[in-house]
Length: 123
Image (cartoon, rainbow, N blue to C red):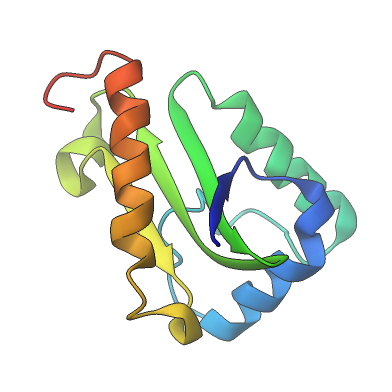
């Protein structure tokens, strides 16, 4: 059964496996990953996870996991800014091998609940 969890350094190996599956140069929506993040090193991965936690007042990041595997990510952007105008309040990505199983719809439903709890209009 899948779960939505906050990003955690304890799933570094599982996250890197998902990251590798996406392949080089492919954008992974929902993870808040920037080109400047150096997730390949333990220190870089930890810094990235810490940055995501630091941004929690502006964006809620969740990983979609099942049985210790990272299947995707979803982000709920709280504020209105240029990225929201371009991409919307919610962005998500599912790794290729986990697609077509309804995970995105499942995660979206849970994030809409979080949006409503935050008092976001239209949620």
